[in-house]
Image (cartoon, rainbow, N blue to C red; front, side, top):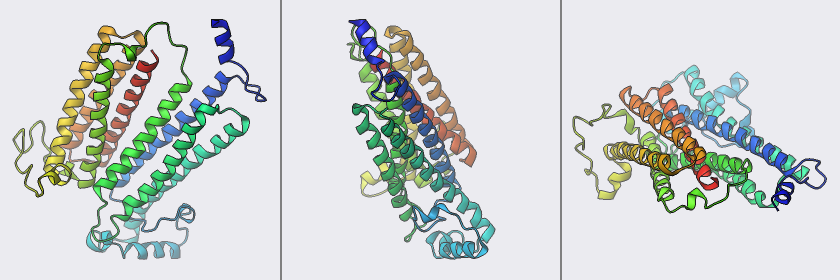
Length: 361
């Protein structure tokens, strides 16, 4: 029976000349490559935000916008369009053409990378479908990822548009949504890729379903990490990291003044700079506590593969906390802000990796 199962798992796809195992590995490598591009995209997006470059392109041209200005006339037109925007009128009045080019290239590169990711996903997908490599159960996941990527592009413009009306700042709600969807796409790419590299599960009850509470701890940690990412978007959108640049206290207090100064009261949770930064800090502490507890539980009861993944999680949490504190104390320099965002992605990577090993162990 076991021999038949192994033989079935490696059978040739009809007309392809390759085994299902080989096809799955090829698709997994492609998904990991796209995930790496999304990782880079998030970092470029962070740099675009930190350099305040995101509002330099005032039109959304999915096709025509691929080509940057190539002549002095084209640059003059782009600059003229930007000069009508709220950011120029209220923040960058008197900016030179050279200074405009510096912020324009960040936003143009960000959008170009988004288009490249679309092609890097679509063209191999068409190829694998045409070759018959994609098994039927996998197709909805891949098509869903492609649709989600397209919606992410539209969400990006929806975010930028919010800063082109009156206030030269994008909505922090839309920014948090844009960031969260990008990380969702990244995590989904990794999850599907890991699934294609799976090996036969050992006999016995899966570790994930064992009655040891580990699954519940993991899901609680995952929920807190998601909240932390959303609040990271709020902190970035509100530029809340530019205040209270001390640690561990905020203005000499564990709980700072002014956390509930706005009305209605609930608006403080989402729009008050002090409260948003305080919540972001507290969530970081909670992530640290839950990660250590989860690591300890897995060390006591988990197999080798799951223990190794929990070590990776603990390292990424520690690294992200160090990056977060350093970013705050140094008042958010661009390079460190981008590194902090990279740390968040590494943390997500470790969460996906651990979750997948827990399910398959």
